[in-house]
Image (cartoon, rainbow, N blue to C red; front, top):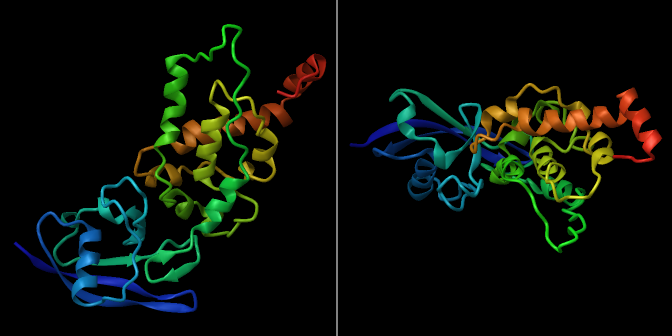
Length: 249
């Protein structure tokens, strides 16, 4: 059984825009992305919307639905009341290209600044070994879809525009996946403190709340990285111990 829903969809580009009203037929089982596709097919063929898999695995269809960053393909229409107005807007932390499409290329530039995985020397028997709990610890971070919902909701980027001094939660997750890997031998602590700007995060956990893969970004990635920075630069006993041993890590 179908019924009409009232949508307000942002239409415009980086020079400006507005929310336009649409009445769209909605069938049972539809998600927000289905409705956007029907809107394109029936009323607004020039509506721009980024999507790919429609299965919650590519992260392409990120948008703000009623003010909350979501993957449109994972938000069911039966969550809304029949008379509820549904507002769909582009991510607010990035420049608008057109309609629901934003320019997220800044994230790719940030990614290039992170030193890649550097394997430790092999064991005397020519192998690398790691324990299962070590595998489990970093596996969580590999679930990231790069939907950038966490980047969008982060107040440091969204409200204060600190893109030039803060990498954002998505790349704290990538740093955590590298830094906590037992076979990695690179040192990224200075990068985290300086270029990545981890000190700007005040652990409000807003990034964790919107993650579609339920990655515990704050607790399992950002806080442990903050501890590493604190140990290196602010713990006098650890600093003395390293000075005696003559090591930086």
